[in-house]
Length: 222
Image 1 (cartoon, helix red, strand yellow):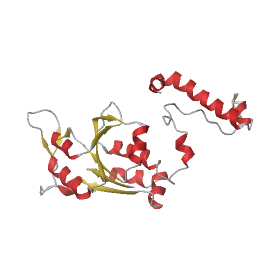
Image 2: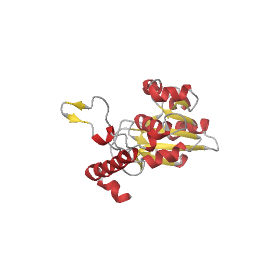
Image 3: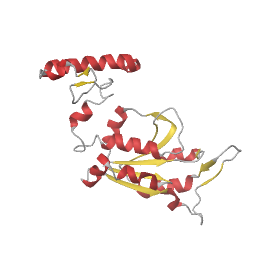
Image 4: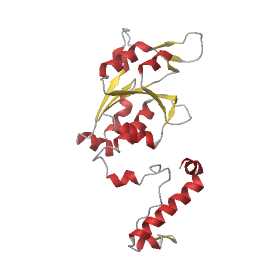
């Protein structure tokens, strides 16, 4: 998979791309991730990419031309162009699985007060990571990149994401490690039994219990 991220602040991604699972996925050629500074596509001598919005209002608006040129510089016939915006479709695990089947993602990060509305005509879909507003699309693009890359073959063990929360519209089951008894809180006996079928049954029941307590809305979707 190839991921191109269009941003005004490429330095924000330094730690994200150089640590942990993402770093190993890049080094093992499971994914190619490229950063592109939208300012490089500005025709303004001062590399300006924003201006005041027509009709007044607070904040600066990202202009369409540099964004369009940045997209077109990396777009291919197999590309899926995604705009990160609070107005987009709420992001879910099922969406991550769908994107993981793509060969090329282009993630467009906004900033300032917002995008010129015409930019929406250049993209294939719009995604929101939640009903709140951030200073820009950089963090949402990291969220999507991380959630997608971990699903690519060979990045992590398949069992790890098959058992994830939301994989089957249930939250994940509780997990434990040593010591068996920590401050009077003990590991459930079933996990020490070695009986695989009983362990699986217990885990599924715990998934249902935890989901009912914390996210009953997920059960309604099942």
